[in-house]
Image (cartoon, rainbow, N blue to C red; front, side, top):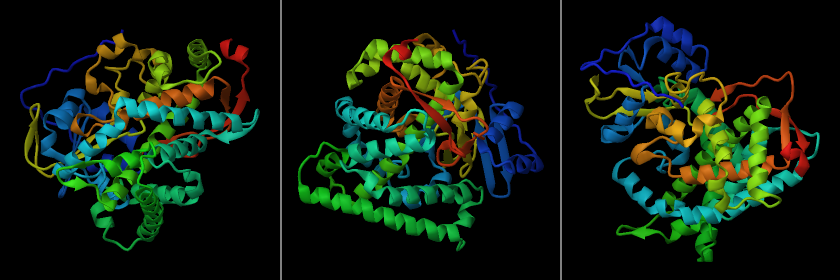
Length: 457
């Protein structure tokens, strides 16, 4: 059983402050998750960086993170990293603040209740099965692209009841340009200054956003004309209203764009990294397939199978520990506050990295090993809650978390029952920290079709 170590917290904490040369040297490597991890391992749970008007705190202890996201969440707003994102997503759940965010979340929340998600499960399995049938034995595929395409189709049908493959080039281009802009501008400490410059990436970004808007607004108009519940999330949102009335087309656009772009990429990357890890750990893949065959037999999974596929969920959870799709959370203090004896001035930027905490040996012995048994109920209970937070936490916990778990488990179970994949040798595989933690060069894998008997071996 994992035994979590809880640190003693002094009455007043003085954070460690690396020198500027060391910070610049680490940043030059262009791998922010590893930069944060090195800083935390060298300087501890609180790292303080100050240069001119810029002041940053890297917090890496679960109790500090709980204070920011839950206990004192009202003292913080989303950080500057979300500003570039808001240019694409507008004022959706990911980017909005205050009373407007509370209203939107209240309107959208019922669409993610368990019964509604169970209805989406049929689409998840159907599309995963369709992909499995399209694969060819011995073919080489980029598993990152395969999972991205699959989750995009699932998102399109569950959100809009449309086949977004018709608009694949527009959607893919918009996402690619948004990611490039986020990497070049949004992740920079000088993002606010860079956004004022007439950079070529900004012009490409706004052209891509306009094309994306054309697609989304057309789908909203078609749904309004239809006037019926098509069983998708957009139909639900068109019917949703409160004392202030229904959502405007602009609000619908912002929420649907947020759910489409932010939702499908996170699950796609989680699944891609899971395939990568399974290829390196055949003993885990064998046990996973044994569970799938034992639970499902010859049939496809349903929503009712989710709770029975416990090891499948553990495999996915461990993959998201090692490669958390959302690898960092950014907040800005809107007033002076105290975090367990640490003074945080108004305007300071707070960074809490899932990648750092998920690799902390205090909570995960041998943190670089792929060990799904870390996720038994007993092991989970032994760790602080915010030793694992792939979906954030507090009032801004990802609204799509139940959807993501259902999709990840059912898609994985559908595919591994008849396919295995081996890594193509000689390729370079490394994570790239954009909006999500994705494979920088993809993951090329050779597919091998399994017979039912082979899945049991």
